[in-house]
Amino acid sequence: MRQFLDPQQQRAWLEGEATPPDTDERSESLEQRFKYTARFEKLLRRPQAQDVLEILRLYDATCIPIPRTTERTYWSVSCLPSTSDKPLVRVNASWMELFTLLPDSDSLRARFILHLSDFTTDGSPEPGHLDTAFLESCVMQPGDVSHFLWKADTFGVKVRGAASIRKFLATPRALRAIRNFNLTHMNRGRNAYQASHCYSLADHMLGD
Image (cartoon, rainbow, N blue to C red; front, side):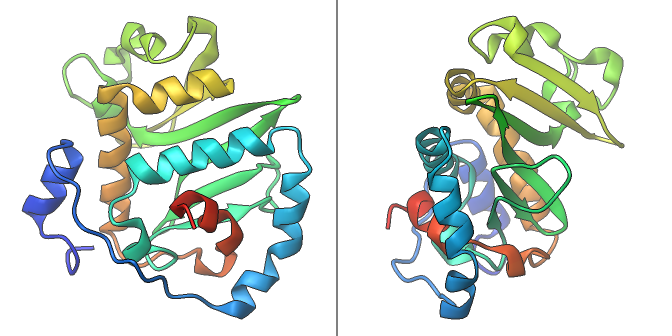
């Protein structure tokens, strides 16, 4: 990532102070595009499809720096990935899951992987210092959010319902936390999930 944005530019984007210019061009593999066309068409038949596309577009616009320049190489989006939790879509960077949308009956739930220290009262990675009140304020109602602890300074936030997912993405402190985690892993090297990138989903994310 540092070949595209130096630390000062990354910090400015993280803090919402600047939007670095992105390229108009996208590199593409037709073989890769056709590989996941059937999965994308299957996703479009799901009752959650419209919300999925709208939320992914919001996520791309606000949570990924220079998304066209870094598409597939530093982040990717998978369509109906074949994992046990049966997600609808998943965004990855390096070796890490960043964001996942899953079905919840006919609605949606999201899973964000984040730095715990961005959600504690004192900025430490101590689970006992989690600012639960703040976490609950990021969604429409307290029952829409839950969390799970993972390892070191990493934890997961689960959000239920499209409205609460949108609110979480629009809450400044939560958005900064998402950006911070994404930058951490985009800076760790090239994306290990390039082979599962779905260009049809990325088209919607990037507004093409």
